Image (cartoon, rainbow, N blue to C red; front, side):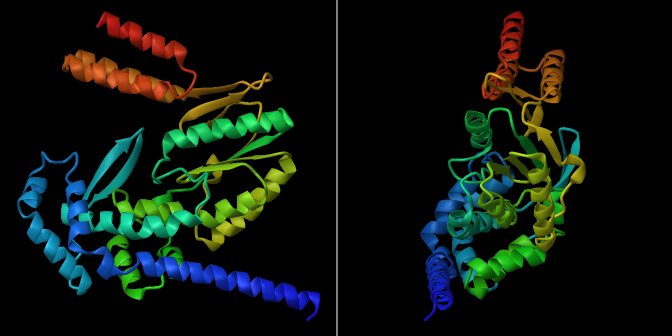
Length: 360
């Protein structure tokens, strides 16, 4: 064997080893008969009632819990389960109208099991560490801390020489491709019936539905190839759902990286919002996840909430005081916002909130 043949043989061995690990993980977690056993389903049935026990549907669910759990197990195993309709409504989130599809509690039970028992253990090992959304022990605070950490380490190594690249996807959930998700399922799950069950609950509308727990897991894994592509370029990266932050040393390298990034997005059928995708000098203010960051010449990182967030919260508190809402609710709202502001350098506004609390 010459050197090329030896390299090819090593590559095939590594590829087969990775495939065997995927198959072992799929066999361990993707067996519907093992997942939908009575004690597991009952455990997640109790979880579904947390925080919504005041609802009539939840109270009825609790009254007939044992019957519902046993019928759910049998129907899923025998392919007799009928997916119910969702409650469709709109919410106004920071001026954006979002269409929510809220499933019935019986369907939510199945979503919770599929998400926690199958999708989480299958997908999590393949995600990069800096993917912060919808993962246990991570989240929004994790993403903010990681951005600060990356800016700090970049300054220690390169100073203020560098460019921040901010990438945003256009209507990410409604534009998620069913074919892309199906390809991901075929890649990681080696059980056709398990794939069918997941897709029956997932593909209920165009794209994937906001308000469905398994949709959050799928949204985390869809851009996974993009995350690994950036990480392989030795570029600091942080992604929180559809918002991506990365740093490049030169403007030209940032442009080249973005052009390759767009090509991979086309393969994954992801639409990038080019109006919200920027290349900014690292020593200028930039916004990521509704927080404004600034790296000054001393290496100090300022992290301030966006002014719109402060204006909106101030209006909310004034309205609550005008309507003479219970003082305990006003105090709790103020305290929760103060806890949010402590993530960054918002000392002046925290002081203002404490003064207004004394006045009220």
